[in-house]
Image (cartoon, rainbow, N blue to C red; front, side, top):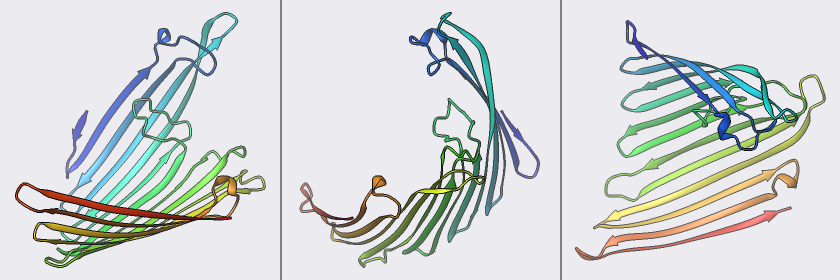
Length: 274
């Protein structure tokens, strides 16, 4: 259902109910029992010629049937409810496009009809594309996330931060140049704010890539270089330090009106470190 509000506001309401049929479960038990899931959501959005703003809120309920193996029948349902929320902002013009998103999803949130929604997570995602000239584009993005929102001392709380930036330069009649850099850091601690925290995960992956391509007379030549470093500061059980380098060379062109040729070579080198 959509409701149109004044001043370019729009309200969207939706609901979905999903359930397991008892007859579809051939081997019932405590870990294999029918579930009924209901999700009600609302979305409020507003837009003009340089800004889009959208907020979403969803509430989910889950009913699990108990199972009595001795009597071979189902017992009364247990119910769990949770919420999820998301806020998005976009600012744009002819020369830039900025987007940011915040989301908070409760640990018990469940949507069987949307398996791509991951519960127990909060985070922010931001990106910026800037193109001051037709032949130059700059881009960057940043995202951070955290889980274990219930502060469960028996679970690992994971924090992840991802940063990326780069540019593409493609002047007409000249070789095009591209560059990108990335950094992905993951940290994990075990315990809660009321207990001693133990660091069980701390690794970082950084990468650089360079590219050159040139188009001429229906021919194209491209060269690429890449380098990445993985560093683990806690335990080799979750991965050893590793350096990786790559090289690629490609040619694609039309030799005649009916004959074309594609050639390519790529090499990769890996160096592990204790």
